[in-house]
Length: 468
Ligand code: SF4
Ligand code: SF4
Image 1 (cartoon, rainbow, N blue to C red):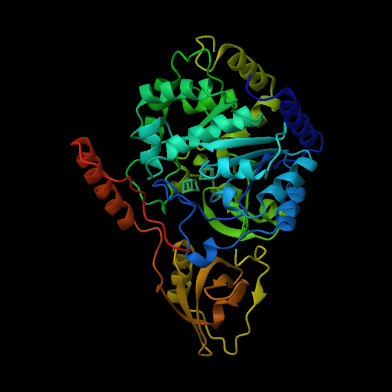
Image 2 (cartoon, rainbow, N blue to C red):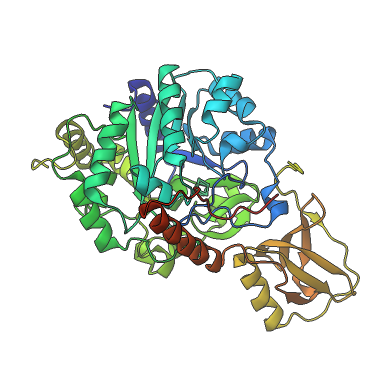
């Protein structure tokens, strides 16, 4: 069994408490994103495509802790961006350990050795490094668009394990995965001494550069059945057995989007970790003001139809385990017998939203409203012209209640601007989510690979990184 008993008990007692309090919606894992900057630019990532002034921002520890208190989840997952680039990561982890929260620090491990040598962390049963490893050497380096990353991550895993840290791996799978190689990779990770493996199909982020290799539901079922048939005895998975049965198409689950909510630099993200359909200032607003019926596969929402990602379905699996005898029994059987058993910096706090003074307002045109909604999806700066003649350049991250939330390009503080004050919106900045950079990179990668295979000495390449 991969997860320590104390952690299982913390989750079980928390879920039972929610049941006693008759809470219909509660979170088991809080996804806390203290920054959106990363030292990689993976092809399937829909998180890092922002202009430089957004990527430079970091969350204040006090705001992160407020979010932790508000939501109450026993487990805190810290993704990003790359959390080891967060300047206050040591302080944040210390505070969370003090509060007896179980932390999964999700990292690509490129900086892990350095942070361990700096003494930023101390081993604790509350702290797990969840290392992003998308398969064996070739699969991982290709998925993260940088050669040499697998080797660095392996080295960091060995070091962290030898120093007594809890270490897990987190594998996102795409359609180009080779099941046999991935099975060997699982065994290799266990050999390195990791506590458990986690995996999930990649979500088809509209903003991710590579749109070709996301898995649909049918392909997900086939891949996970291939991966998990006759599992090796040494494999340990650090996720709910019911979720794994779901990935193999053996169990139907519906999404619980509020179960793993995301608190980010912009606030509480609606409705889930994957979609960005607005932000709220508080957990209570997120729970009470989100139209939950519009999300999940059953809602018919096209963005949810192929989603089988852990953040939506693990909480459903946990809920089923503790809320019905059938779910509990099924979990016990899968745990005992295996899931495939025939038996069954410009650093500012998150948005406070200072209202910008506008002199003139006018009737809102449909054209402007349409452009503003497109601007939320656009991963670059726009130029907003107000009726009073002011011209503002920056990033629009929310449109709600007749106003936009806006990070100006050259100021640290977020602003709120009435839609009625806006005369026009121009898409002037570079869209960091366009596919052109990715296609150019794949072309170059394949050329370099062919030259290397032909015996030529060619330097390793990484996908573009915008200088900050
Ligand atoms: S490691 Fe890759 S997937 Fe993770 S945040 Fe960085 S770019 Fe995105
Ligand atoms: S199905 Fe996926 S994308 Fe849709 S709400 Fe659930 S987690 Fe989010």
